[in-house]
Image (cartoon, rainbow, N blue to C red; front, side, top):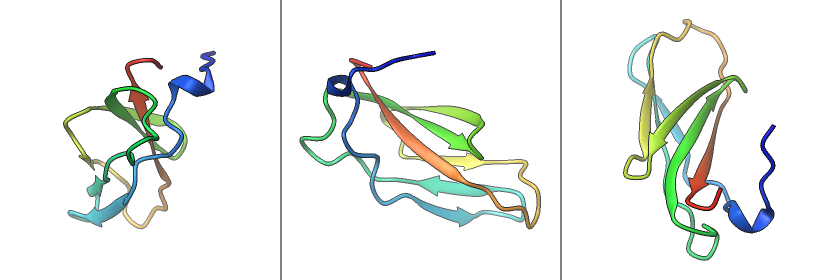
Length: 87
């Protein structure tokens, strides 16, 4: 279990999260940055969660990921959280 102090995590999630299908089993997810004043430190990357389970770590310079090997016609939930140098 990890516990983070509220002063070390961003107070807002990445903005403008969008998904676009690349094929029947691939999905491109894109997002914007964290608004100024909400980062609570230097953003060092993002975690991308699929259906509250699978986690993909993306570096700070990236604002997209292609999810591959998805099931056709299946619903997916994608969540993105930012990581800072403090937590």
